[in-house]
Picture 1 (cartoon, helix red, strand yellow):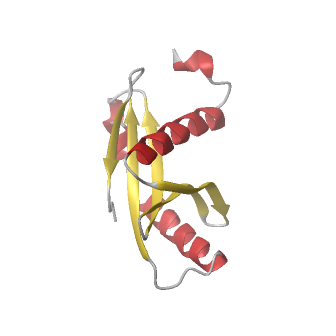
Picture 2 (picture 1 turned 90 degrees about the horizontal axis):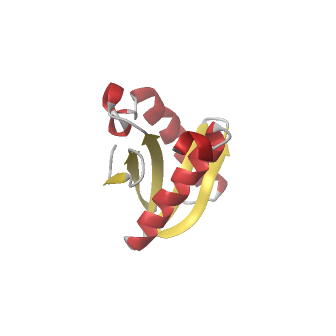
Length: 121
């Protein structure tokens, strides 16, 4: 079903990032930015949880084959994400702020299963 909706991977990614943002807003987080891009990589969502900055990686997988969405956060991706976060903090002069990195795994066709993991690293 999803294959017919999306014309490219980017649009599919945007759809699931919006779904994750909507889910996190319902959990009380405030959206700050989406798709921050720098030379080190991309941060899917940047949000705030009261006074804590939350940097969110979003992954979607249609099936559990090869481990599903939950198993896609590789060590290399963590390094790129960490560097991107440092760059964001420099760009927006965020010093001595509370922060955490969360992971949202979206699995399956409609209805989707959403797993929100706080403090993944």
